[in-house]
Length: 453
Ligand SMILES: *[C@@H]1O[C@H](CO)[C@@H](O)[C@H](O)[C@H]1NC(C)=O
Ligand SMILES: *[C@@H]1O[C@H](CO)[C@@H](O)[C@H](O)[C@H]1NC(C)=O
Ligand SMILES: *[C@@H]1O[C@H](CO)[C@@H](O)[C@H](O)[C@H]1NC(C)=O
Image (tube, rainbow, N blue to C red; front, top):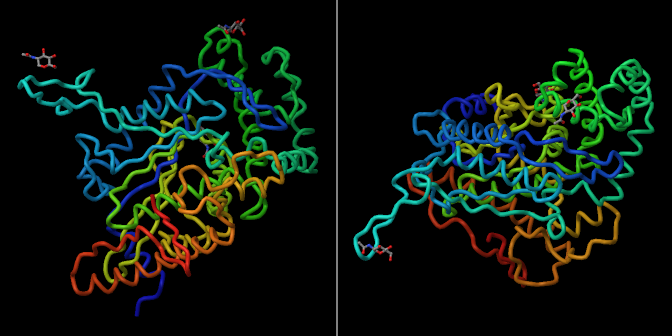
């Protein structure tokens, strides 16, 4: 008799990867200031080092997911020339804007390097190869916080600002600040007038780290342990700001809106008739911390309560279990910067891959899936463009969508997953291939809602 954990162990063994969602952090850049109270960002710029880091991450993802000999190869995904129906790229275009965009491009250059096969034969028989030896142009969608809050939900959000000030007022914060006084005294000479307070910990660390990387004079002068202490305080600070004691809390807002993009992509990858197999979301460090909390990964991996390094990646793999358990499972993997490799992490205190349906069931409580819901959660009233969902969301037939309909459609979406796995089980038994299961339209009592784009 196999109990649930045996089945999961079987799923872990040699499951087939149907698709993957990769959340990537931008590469190195010049100093990036963030207002400690509002998280509005200053200007920054990409560096060549940052491009190299992101390019490297792209190459790693390529060998991990696009190489047929890799155990994580995405079944059937094209690797020589990009098939633009198999990949979708979303880029946060808010704070750190150009840096994140440039990082996405560099990553894609590593994921799909130039290929001389990228050529065309013209009517007059002459052959033209794309520039730079067959450069591959992968379409990239930028997401502007002014009309879509899914990738930058933590700015202009009064409830989040309140959460930040409560963190600053907490006993834990005050005690930490007191302990750090010796550091603040000694760091003064190396931060040139920047306020040496715990509230300013991100800016102190980012400045020190950035100078240490780029400026030899500075690097030669900086006493050896200062950057580590600065990093520890910044980790404490960012972890407190971008987390919440509760799943579904305001502190996890960065992860909660990211979950929308994740669920939406999973929904597409899971359906056989949708060619999408690879989703890249290029963003900052904030949603990493927040997702680690929202998905209860930090319970098992407390060391993840920290800033991920530049060009880190969080990969969510959709895998098909191996018989007798043919459900779909998710495996989560984290790669901290360019140094190490991917490491499997576990969500919701589970020590194995999690069935897709269970994940959706658990994640749905926290997800924020529209601008309107975002505005409600934030308690602000200023959001102009908040009629509907996020821009990427669902082309709803109706222009005026009530929350009730959204909720109802979501339940239908979960229902379809359940239905689908039942169907998969049934068809696997008879060895048939599943076709045409992907519903384009879901009929809801009297109302037609097209859920997939
Ligand atoms: C063929 O057509 C292309 C595009 O119109 C042109 O650039 C090229 O010179 C032509 N080649 C020949 C051999 O006529
Ligand atoms: C490098 O660091 C030194 C010492 O802190 C500083 O005087 C100089 O302005 C810095 N150079 C640049 C290009 O920022
Ligand atoms: C990533 O690695 C750095 C060291 O390079 C470490 O300080 C940090 O805590 C790590 N972050 C996470 C989220 O594991």
